[in-house]
Length: 281
Ligand code: PAF
Image 1: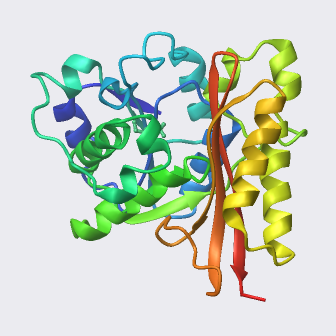
Image 2 (image 1 turned 180 degrees about the vertical axis):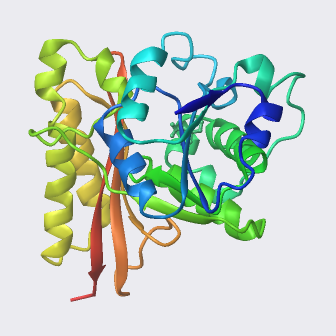
C-alpha cells in the first residue's frame, strides 16, 4: 500500500489507476471500516482510503483532542485488507491556510445530529468535497451507522452534480448488537455492558412500527425515556423517512429509519435501524 500525505503527491499517484473507489475515514479503524474496504474492491480498480481527523467537524466541546489516533495499526489493517493507496494528510497538508470556503448544507443537516452538533455537517461536507476534489473518485463508500452523514453527502453530491456514486455500507455490530464505533473506546466496562440497550430500544421501535403502530411521537418518547431510566442522556430518538429524513406522514407508505443519539458516560453513541416500506393500517 502506498501512503501519501501531500495533495500533489496524492494527485500524481492517481494517474492510470482506472476506476477509483474512495473510503474516507478518521482512522482508529475497526471491522466496520474494514468491511467498507472489502466492499470497495468490488466497485472499481483502485481502493483509496483516507485517514484525517477533521477539526472542522468537531464543536468546541466535542472530542477532537481525545479522538483515538492509531495510525500504525490502521495502516497494518488497511494493507491486510488489500487497500491500494492511503491518503493521510496532516492539517498543514489539507488546510495550508485557514479554510474560509465551506459547504453550507441545507435543512437536512440542521436537524437530528445537526441540532445537537451545530456546524458538524458543514465541516463534514467541506472536508469530503475537498477529498473528492483531490482524489477524483468514481465511487465513494460511507457507513450507514452515520446515516444522516450518508444522506447529507448523497444530497450534496447530487445537487453539485459530482460524477460520483455514493454507496452506503451496512453497520457492523458486536455479538451483543452494539454498533462498532471508535467512540466505544470511551465506555467503561460497566457502560460497555449497558451500551447494547441502544440497539435493543431501536429494534423495539422498529418492531412496533412494523406491527402497525403509527404514533411515532409516543414511540420516540417512550424509547428515549427507557434509555434515560438506565443512565443515558438522550439527544433524540426519531422515526424518519429514509429518502429525505423528514417526519413520515402516518397514512403514507414509506421506507423508514429509526435514528438515535444518546450519551452514556462520556461517550455519545449514535445508531439506527432501517424499516422497509410500511403502509398505513
Ligand atoms: O465518518 C467519518 O469518519 C468522517 O465524518 C468523514 C466522512 C471521514 C469526514 O471526516
